[in-house]
Amino acid sequence: MTLTKKSLIKRLVAIVVLLNFCFVSILLVSLRQSRLQYEEQAAVSTRNLSLILERHLIGVIEKIDLSLLTLSDYVRHESNSGAIDRREFNEFISRFHTRLPELDSLRATDLYGNIVYGIGVDPNKIVTISDRDYFIRQHDRDASLYISKPVLGRINGKWNILFSRRLTNQDNSFAGITFATITLQRLSNTFGMLDVGRHGSVVLLREDLALVARYPQYEGIEKDIGKKNVSQKFQELVKSGKTSGSYSTVTGAENVERIISFRKVDKYPFYIVVSFAIGDYLAEWQKLVVQGSAITVCFVFFTLLTSWLYFRNWKQRLAAIEQVNQLAYYDSLTNLPNRRLLGDRLTHAFAQAKRFRRSMAVMFLDLDNFKQVNDTLGHEVGDELLKVVAERLHTCVRSIDTVSRQGGDEFIVVLSEINQLEDAAVVADKIMSAINQPIQIQENTLNITTSIGIAAYPINGDTVIEIMKKADAAMYESKNGGRNTYSFCT
View 1 (cartoon, rainbow, N blue to C red):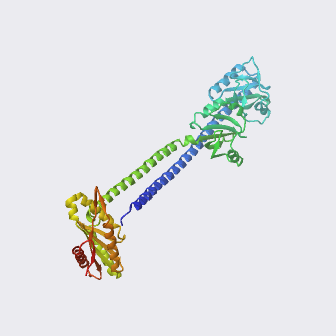
View 2 (view 1 turned 30 degrees about the horizontal axis):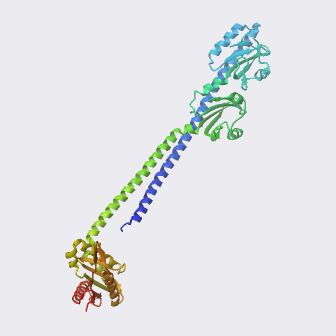
View 3 (view 1 turned 180 degrees about the horizontal axis):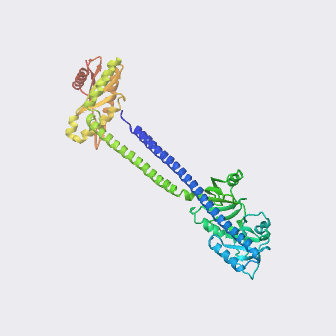
């Protein structure tokens, strides 16, 4: 089946749309799966980082507690000898402090809460912490390691967390406390050693979800220390008894989407919260999106270009075929069907007439005195005259009929279906009237006539050849009868 231009365009559009739809669908599915993988990888990374920090904090706290217990044992032992030697005790404290670089200070008080031993203590300037909770709690005989809330240090003037233990004499009476100090800035610096991306964060919270420390710090963080400012999702998870987990949420004033993992620090009153911002953990994926978009644009351009080239090639081939057909089946001057195409159409019309038992007619036309036009006015004018005659003949017949030029000034009209001979006569009258109208070619006004011969099936014959011969003979009768007339085969 021969494709029309419209049907080919529809097919090409459908193919291009289908190909691009499939390509984009596959790309979107691939990008979706890739995003899920990046999100899962981010969740795993935050969980791993929170686990690393938990183990690190546990290790630091255990070392601090061991140091405090050792100092407590020292005081208990030295209490047998009476007063504690300040210089020796300070040297003892200093040796432990060098083993704990995480600490800002390691100190001890007397039973009244005055800081009298340790790093950075000025014996001439008494600082008391008797009102601090970490001192008051240690009056209890059964007190163990106590970890304070963030407090502003009275010696270093910084925000600190303090770890304290009770000091006792040989008779278990209260002798003061020993305590270690870690600044919140040092905690933040420790968190900063982890790679959480440009917009990620590490947060240390107390059990009540109050802020202890954060990385990165921001301007004015001091006013938020000790405040509860966590997402509703996190609160619900902790309230449900979860000690670890991961979730996605939008946080912060900038409404940044994050993947967050949290973990309770074993038996200690802390939660570690590690978060990755979507812009960080999807940075590589976003590059894939850009690359995929570029590939998609190239693919769409390629399919459009390919389809356009195919369509152009098809048009060129069609034009070539039409040109060949034109040369093979049509008269080059008038574009009317030539002898070959006339034979095909006449055979078809004859077969249809036989099959459906109806009549048809063939008309032979010859222009009168055409040779005189060529001889006097030239072949160029003669050719223009033939073109005009061909156009006028077309106006006199139906679309189912055929007008053909046989060569020179001879034309044949095939009336594919007639009811009676008078129908052919009507057409002959129309043709003669149309041709007899003056024809203006260049500066010449021509008056031309024609002689017509008519033969009909089945009246005048039972074969194509027979009908053609009789129509030709009838045309010569018109010529011999004076021209400018039509004759039926007799």
